[in-house]
Length: 140
Image (cartoon, rainbow, N blue to C red):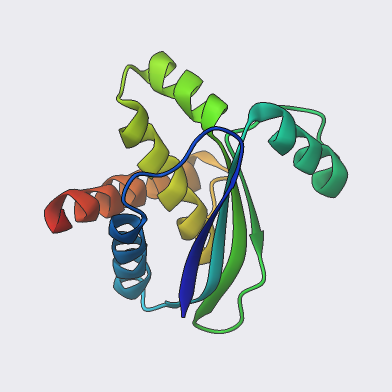
């Protein structure tokens, strides 16, 4: 149905249509479809407040995902701190856009049922992230 992007701060995606196409392909590859999937790109302080208010965590994070999905229709809100993504990109010595795509697809993978609470789940999540990120590069 719809993938939406909202902005709370200075960051704005380039070519939203490419991201919408890619994210829909990611969902299709997992046998799912987008109901309403909303991304909110924000700064660290905004996301820290969301983290504290809704999850009770007083910490910075790069992403928070809220899942409202039913059956195979994915519905959710994904909050992404562009400041945390930039810092992680520097730490991992990758391009900002690469880290951004990893975080974006990470949220989708949570919504389709992947978790990362233990080492085995983290390994599967990383493999899936890489697989889905390659889909962006193949398509565009």
